Length: 226
Image (cartoon, rainbow, N blue to C red; front, side, top):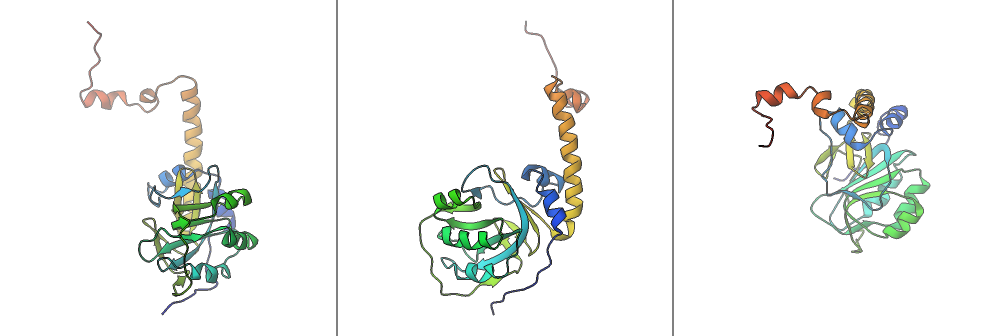
């Protein structure tokens, strides 16, 4: 039986906005190096940085019917996360679906398959992260599911989780942990700002991080050239 889950619980909007202040690398480190989607997921154009709440779509291979179904469940600030039930690099998503999602306030799309019409999507300013770029068409024949837990590019995504995506990749932050991870990300960013200032001033990482004793313990020896 295929199902569309309606009225999902979403992470708080202010928490989503706060997480959107940070890069994916910072968030990934802040949540103990978890939640990062596979590196083959790349933006169709560089420079985009989005955050939003996940509307999940499980689709059959080479069939984008359920993407159309899922649009009705989207709210402003959502990110649609789409994963096929088996391998497919067909072009599930293009400029017409992008126009529809943009009209409903959707921030962007994460697609573990192919995207098409990337020039038009770029000109429209609608960001997509996908596994492939492919003009291969799809059909509308087989049902899937909307707003169920899915695995997308190696990460479990639940409806309402926070998605943050930039040129470095895509981070998934579980809804119930989002507030804690936002605070940890802020702390990490503040610490990195302090370290960056010291690097800019010429200090060495081995001194800032007190690495010399451990390097000596491991047996590192300094010698002058004879």
